[in-house]
Length: 169
Image (cartoon, rainbow, N blue to C red; front, side, top):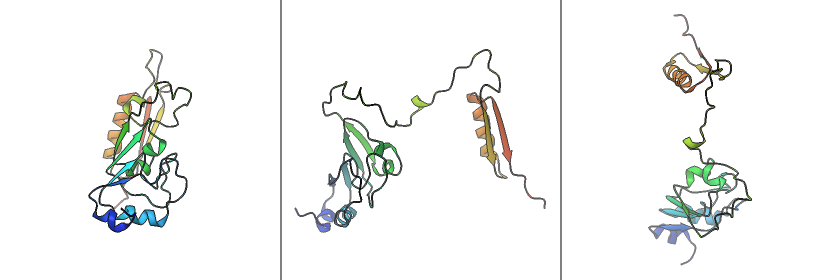
């Protein structure tokens, strides 16, 4: 079929495999018009228009329902705004040897609770060795109070809550 907006608009599903993760320039207007006409997009590797190295949109990029990528996630899958355009992200195994990435350190990580580590408490810890957190709040400090309570619960040494005083009537 010809690469035209009418064809993309007729299809129930469009497979976006126009550009890959190495894109470093804006996509041509003609490509943007065709992708804009698509009703539902599944992206191969990364949605066209998203820079795989940074997650930046290069000119135009369109929301994918799903993105299928290969071997490893790229920074553009994890960094905003590209991460929001990928839809459901599927990492497909293409038979890469298990040691293939040992020599290449990761450039970014998916933010998951596994990365959220706190130092272990010791018997000699006190409020000045556990960090000081300052929370700034407006007049309605309810959420700030909850944040302060949570910070203390997870081990912050000292928590200061600074709330705006309501104006005198």
